[in-house]
Image (cartoon, rainbow, N blue to C red; front, side, top):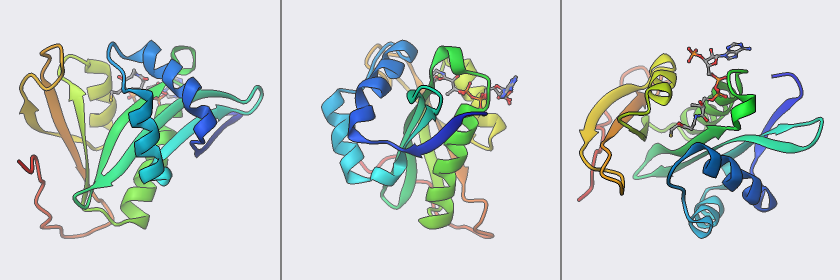
Length: 164
Ligand SMILES: CC(C)(COP(=O)(O)OP(=O)(O)OC[C@H]1O[C@@H](n2cnc3c(N)ncnc32)[C@H](O)[C@@H]1OP(=O)(O)O)[C@@H](O)C(=O)NCCC(=O)NCCS
């Protein structure tokens, strides 16, 4: 993590964020959607910047919906993986959502066959909650994973899987 700074995403970081997203995922979010979500909850959009060359090398996008946290996407540039950047991004977002906004839990969807990401989340306290059949446009199933707010001692917050 030497020389890596975690900071809020700025609008002019978006092209670099999209490049990492394109290198990491088969399907990507439309840039306009990313910009809309960024403006709706700027605190939830973080980047990892290599201070030596000001290059964006990782990002996480999260927001609050229906009172709980939701991770939309996280990725680290391939050549920067396994150095603690993903963990640092996740930790920073969790601090914002759990400590500042006091959400009861954070949810996310991950591709059923994305073993590396699922393992990454398991190790950081996320648990499988539900299978979401054919969640993605190519027909792949998703797993809904949830982490409860560890700073709230007793929580009866129901996990809202779907509002419709
Ligand atoms: C999942 C993802 C974001 C993780 O990012 P990352 O920056 O590699 O994450 P970290 O470096 O913090 O952790 C990855 C592993 O490297 C290990 N690691 C961290 N620093 C290390 C170091 N200096 N030396 C060796 N290993 C190290 C971590 O312990 C971790 O292993 P663990 O999960 O067994 O504990 C990344 O693999 C990625 O971009 N994947 C593609 C996109 C994706 O699938 N996103 C999630 C779906 S929503």
